[in-house]
Image (cartoon, rainbow, N blue to C red; front, side, top):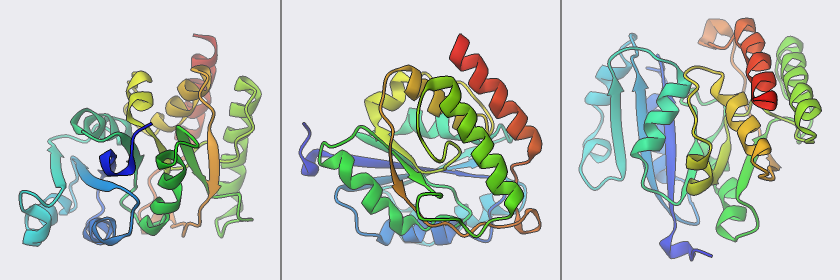
Length: 238
């Protein structure tokens, strides 16, 4: 088992049109207490709202060599999955975590999620938005998440509570063994399905989140839910 002082947490931050929050996310990820060293991989997925310019003109502490922060730009928007895969390819850590750039989930929660992996108690941790009670989200959103999670449990015999969570943390060798190829929001069901199909146990811990509306920049929609079901079925019977 790796010792904590030899561990490195690679935090992948996929970003698309998050000009208002991206620097705040990076600053929080830099300052939170973690049980291991960190590197932060910010992947700008072809943003068109000024996110690239904000990142390129970020304070020196973010852009300096040796800051532990790497900013990558994709010239065209290819989707969240493509951004995550780009970050995974560039990562050098022993543990991988994903952090959305919209601040629905407070980065401070990463410390508690990473700890069981560092202690050798788990290889995969999901941060569940539903273990701490009903979240403050529209009923349609909650119903859709429960339907997709229920479909996952039915197909794979699992008992997780939040398949679509952004907080998927795992050992780097586990992440790379999944051979991900999804490009868009279908990365979430693909990660989950391949973990379960590979025999990896998913441990869940509660997290709190502050949901935002489509008017505030929420991007996932009903078509992504349909695509998620397609991916789950395909992965179950491939």
